[in-house]
Amino acid sequence: MNEPLLAVRGLEYIYPGGVVALRGLNLSIERGQKLAILGPNGSGKTTLLLHLNGLCKPTRGEIQLDGQPVGYDHQTLNHWRRRVGLILQEPNDQLFAATVSQDVSFGPLNLGLSDAEAGERVREALEALRVAHLAGRPTHALSFGQKKRVAIAGVLAMRPEILVLDEPTAGLDPHGVTHLLGALQQLYEAGTTLVFSTHDVELAYAWADQVAVFYEGAVLRQGETALVLGDREVLRQSRLRPPLLLEIAEALGNGGDHLQSAPRSREGVLALLQERLAGNS
Image (tube, rainbow, N blue to C red; front, side, top):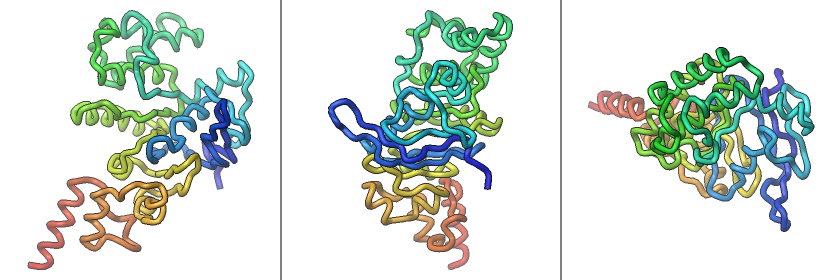
């Protein structure tokens, strides 16, 4: 069995003052997967993400990259962060340069790339996030959704293998969510492993390959999306409701042993409904 690309083993983190945020947490991130870290607010999702590229150092336990424990010296952290890029929930925490192109070029230039190489990275990243037309715009003049995509472009220009996103759709309207998920889907199809935190079970069900359900600093269950979100006991423990599309599919006869084949889109559920209605006519 292949080692996961990134793994968390027995992770514990205690904030100053004795607040326990993570409790013996185990998690595996497989190459080429979309993994949703799903749980209610305060369950430890953001704290975990801050560990995934070394911004936090665990009280106990370890992070493994390619099966090997990572270190926290300067050289190791730089190598680690080139491979694992982190996108914070609030884009203003990551944007600091005067213009979009200057902000996105900061990472590649810090890698020691030439101006020409960095410029090519910037162009590729902005095109991938569909914001190339904003290259010369002041960062303070962007909308919230534009800031989100530019922040992701800044990390993408470093060409990480894994992109870790904290609540990527928070604060976006439906149009903004559609645009952002479309851009992230293109990155995924190009080979980027995506890890994102959310408390939105509908988003996790529709979009993730795997789900890890969090509660009080631990993973209750990790696995294939439909199987995990079809586990009523796990959802009850984590105080989450089942996704509506899955409930409808189950009501139409796609429950039990057929969860893995349950449709995970609105269009899929409507097609199943039409099939059932046609069969009963």
